[in-house]
Image (cartoon, rainbow, N blue to C red; front, side):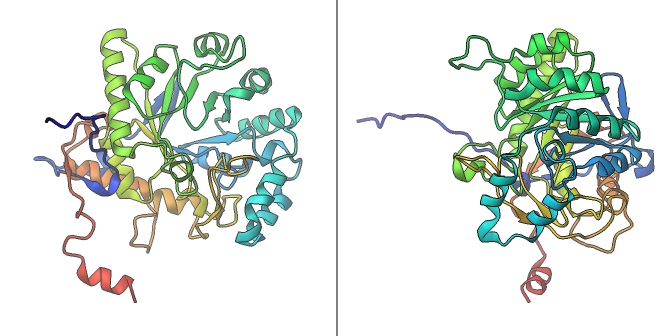
Length: 380
């Protein structure tokens, strides 16, 4: 009797299981072009800072903008709940592990204040470009406030985002109408599949975030069992981007969001098809970050089902060191732009688009091959 198969599965790959293949031609790293475009906005580096309270506040946003990147401010976070969030951030940093979840639930129960939404956006605008994030539930309420304050990029983020949503409400958030009503680019996420990405692109959004649960502070995969390893997720959504571009003639950038711990992961994300990356835990290590060496996810304070935890990342250097160096660290967590340009040079890619075409191989031992002495030293 033939054994029937209930369902089929394919193997999905994360950063530790793949490697980039060097090119037949090498390029001087300084001659590579790593610029990133959203709508009419051009950024000199393709890095976005995660919309998380341990990473982003107004001073950090301005500092990141001056260095050529983009920060996304969480409009449902501490910055818009408290006039002076510094005391709350200090309390979070000082709380013992046994009390942190309850503390986060308590401090995030403070209502969002629309006047603070406008004030934070206006403050960032004085020093650079402002992108800000809301969840679908608060989009209609906060969208007019952000437009009036002069926002440059509007971001709608949730754990999983789709173009079709079933609920009891008569009329939910319709992305095509949102895009038509917004005078600025609308970025949406997160998703991990070809079909979801394709349907979101067809609504008129200007960019899409890819990644469910890979972040250092996120526990969605443990709590819900939901997620796709980031390399496979990025490749699938990039395929949707390219197919949509061929058919519609409109290019929708892919932003890999989460799971990148060092420069190597960053480079693999681009080779998997990303146009830009969003990172949190690495940037939370900056002296300028408001988390004081701690980092927690957007879903952590959920009153019924926290999907995240506070993680200690430490304070390891300035934002400029993390992005551009110089660094004395050997773990790849600093000089991310130097790592990206060098990888592009080694692989013969002048642009991010060319890096997306670089050959990748399945290589689960790439980090440990021949590194016995380093492994022994790290265990001492």
